[in-house]
Length: 503
Image (tube, helix red, strand yellow):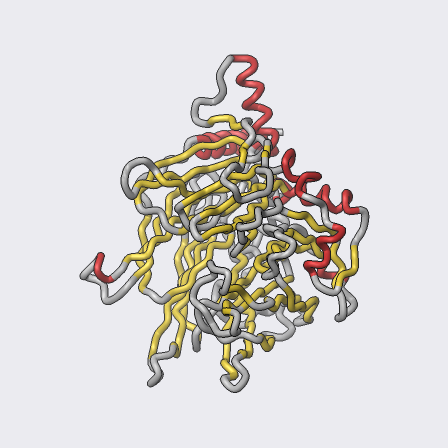
């Protein structure tokens, strides 16, 4: 029960900790996240341009060495930082190596000792590219011994230039890649999605079994973002360029292992987000959920004995909806709500285009108000990041340039415990505040306004200069961009990574 209230499951069977030791560490872990202390971060500066990601307890980033006459990259330097945890007995470690060419995407899995790299070759005659997906041992950079085909190629219809978008995610032996092009009405590349004339092309989305090299599923459609919700189900965030009907977005659950016809797609369930008012237009939508569904296994490349880890079944799905340039709505949806929608829909539907699933999809009123929480943000760009049952995002403070990092926990057992504390003692835990008031959207974005009432706990910490936010079980990562004018000692622009160890 204590593990469930913390959103955790036991670590590998080889863990040497006794039950009492695990319970003591679990108590320390829960206390640390009730009131996160953001002090004395480890700060890393990385020169631009660079790419980065954080998968589980591993922060990865890459910089590029130029040597060609046109200034293009000849090598990519990869750096990996295994983040430490005091309560979960994880030791930090840093290693790096170079790989040839320019890496556009990377994904990692500590437990599989897996590094996936994506490089691209342009085909200038037809404005598309060949994507090379290679599989390596994370610890050494050598070809992964479990990959039947060390390199797989896929042709995509978009050039490897900004602002064209590319995303990658991994779930066990499946790797998914999404890419799309930002264009105007004349199908010319554009820099910004935020007006009636600028939109995105149909995306190209495919899933590969990295061990066998088999292409499991490929589709061109109106997909803007995705996340794995099980080892065979993927949640797709859909956004149509059509303004009729005025949907803000659609969440489609697809069993990618059961797609046998190229001419159509089988959609397991579809959830509709609120209807927009006549003058409102949704420009971007993205979904977040971590960690991917997998067992917490011991790995030969990880020497740490971990007493407990995040329960993948307690995950929260966050949907970031950008309606106007500086207006964002965060929809916080428990995984259990998505799972219930599969039963509510009563069976899969065959569609020619994914957006056709709207016809038999679940209207917002039938699933959203009681089973989600919607939070509005105005004036601050950026995404809401989710890990386990928690999510975090930045809010503006009253002091100039100040920001607040807000942590929200949707674990129902934790909320229930807090309610019990209020009923028996007259007050809840002082480090957190229980939120149970309906959130009402009354700024003219959604038809009739919307009320959501899913309970959660929140805490916050004040910081200055908050950029991109990412976190895992133990650490919060804040990424800021420093311009050359801000730091004359630097050769050029750089990224600053501030790592705060919470637990």
